[in-house]
Length: 213
Image 1: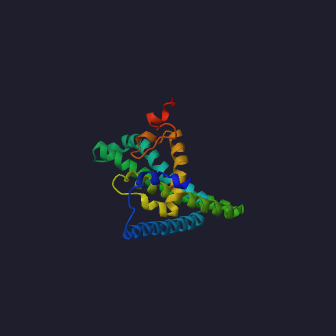
Image 2 (image 1 turned 135 degrees about the horizontal axis):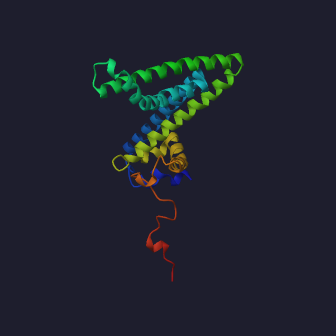
Image 3 (image 1 turned 90 degrees about the vertical axis):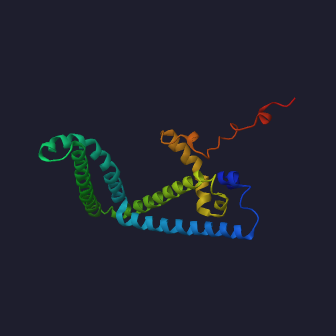
């Protein structure tokens, strides 16, 4: 249930009392919700405009292109080193930048080719619809990142105001599934989080776990 959310258990004793604090909580919550809606709409519109294929190609060119450029830069730098009056490190950095730019340019042209093909096959509408969904997923991912950052700061900044925010309640309810998914692919160690709480049953006190006489 939402009432048993993570930030309820962390900040239950804080920010309760004065009308001023209640007003601050409501203002933060409302501002967060409005900002999330604006980001969601922006990402969805951009996703629909670029299409799902455009989103995927852009992502692959930006992230995958850098990784590929990093991997190829050493070999390319050894080929161009005799022709450049630079140190080996600077030559490799130059090679990395050149390869990365070429990959980005190739990604732009690949996106145009894919869009032309989808338009020719009358699949551009489906592509735009999937791009809209991809934009919503990106907005949700950003929300999860902000939620995790705020919870990491919970020892300093009380997260109790998040109880009033629909966006933060959504992130709180979704976080266990996200955490399990990231842990399953070894991208996140739950125990490393400063605000990690053990699953129910693992954190019982000795008095609760001992059988009664």
